[in-house]
Length: 345
Image 1: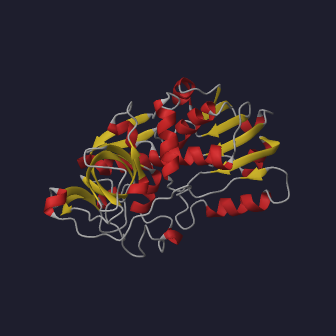
Image 2: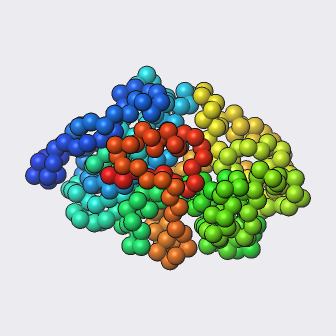
Image 3: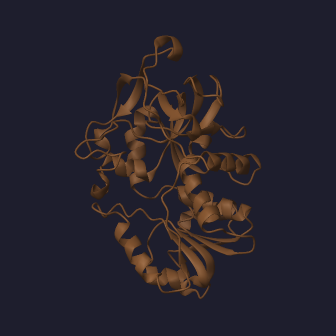
């Protein structure tokens, strides 16, 4: 498996880039969406293994909203943050666009290629990405659809295939099936041959059914942890049920992957819940799957193949222009997004 990294940058010249400045959404301090400003800034530099992407679309992830506010506080020493002010002023990691220029060691891409994947600073006209963090855009997707795939699709794929080892015929429950990760998880689980139950609110029941769920539970009227049903794998994206209740819904040797961000806990986010889960699963046959999503090139290729085969289609709730990125971030911060929110550049 290849994992994406970004090399130390070297200066990109006028001749190779064709442009030296760009419009971008920049933040100089942590806070609400009010800290985001659209302004001119320097084009990103690229290293020998990097690609300069002309951004056509970028997805907004809950992590973008959290990092904008410097949440959780315990994470601020991490490389993507900054202790008092943001280390990197342009948010956004999920990107789709066209290759503008390539570093001297890049052999898989050339200018004009349509690509999607991960970068640093996607809420801008141009972004730098590692060549291992990109793949050719699925031919049957728009740029907006392709931008919705990398993070949410990779979390769902890694949870189900790599950590859950979900097999045909197994019973899978996706709690939070209408969100960004949930909509991918429902479709990927079906592609793996599982019997899939999605949990969501009333307005989203038909949508979750339409993307392939065999059964849909409206959590406003029914509690899946009290139904008596048992599942081989549960992906919990919302953390709205206790760990004890979730274990009650698991088969004796089933696996739970807790994935709720819990950013309302400004200091520790979901760390406390994960520690409790590790303790509660220690002496039972049920299993706890925990991981931090890795930006793997192979996952992008696997997602591209699933999409081009017709097994997975991104669900987009709303699309905003670059100038309205602050409104897009506010909407993602509500936690009520159906599928993904995308910035069109």
